[in-house]
Length: 294
Ligand code: NAD
Ligand code: L34
Image 1: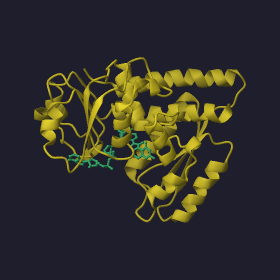
Image 2 (image 1 turned 60 degrees about the horizontal axis):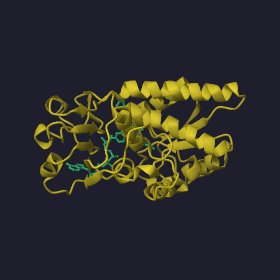
Image 3 (image 1 turned 45 degrees about the vertical axis):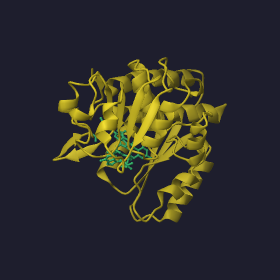
């Protein structure tokens, strides 16, 4: 079965829209998100435009703040401080990657955790690890929601996560191993968490043998065709996070054609995790708004 992220994301946008209309009907202001983008990396431009469009659809006010690629780290830092201190902004993100002369860690660390709707600050990551209320990074939150809406439980399952980035692999592994009672806002009915998690990366030996024992495989490596059919157990669930452009075509990290017949559930690229990432940003923005206005 195909895990239709595009469809689920549209359903969630409908739910968000109703919640935001209810705020308006009660005479309240709507949530406001700022998106900072540096330079004109074509993939980033597409993702940011998708985010702006999704905000418009649900009634979140969104502003795009675009800087040329030559912006200094100091100027970008002062923009972050300005957004931290602007009471009209509920949340903001700085789209990654940043140009080489700007330190991503420095920028991420400067964001106020209450406005960090990407969930990438050390404060939010640390709180997530300890099961405290936090903002969870958009892609893992979206994958968790996708699993939940298809009622794919993770309790006791062996989940293999391929990739150890701060934005996907690491927080994904944490959410999956967490005791579910510690789970945070936005969680759906199915029991998510309580998995046995193996994290693999570029130095992992015998990835094939490890993957073959997995009930669920989440691939976030940025390597087209990495996950082949021989690595997948019959009836496993496969989540493809990768986004690669090969000969002008958008593909994930999974050899979809050969893996799909073996998998019980599989997410496609495009139309799988990407739209879930975007809708999770909207959910995080509404969450930050509620924290901010209470
Ligand atoms: P990254 O690009 O920073 O790092 C890649 C990770 O994969 C590293 O941890 C590396 O150790 C691991 N890796 C690379 N090759 C490997 C191999 N052959 N075997 C095992 N591990 C390997 O990671 P990222 O930022 O999480 O991005 C990964 C991919 O996911 C990229 O294609 C990116 O575009 C995509 N992505 C998609 C979304 C989405 O919403 N769909 C969100 C974030 C990232
Ligand atoms: N700060 N930087 C920050 N936050 C993020 O959450 C991201 N990410 C990743 C890159 N940098 C970031 C995203 O937004 C990747 N990402 C992202 C967002 C949207 C989509 C893919 C990745 C997306 O919309 N994917 C569509 C296809 C888009 C296309 O046509 O290129 C899909 O169906 O998969």
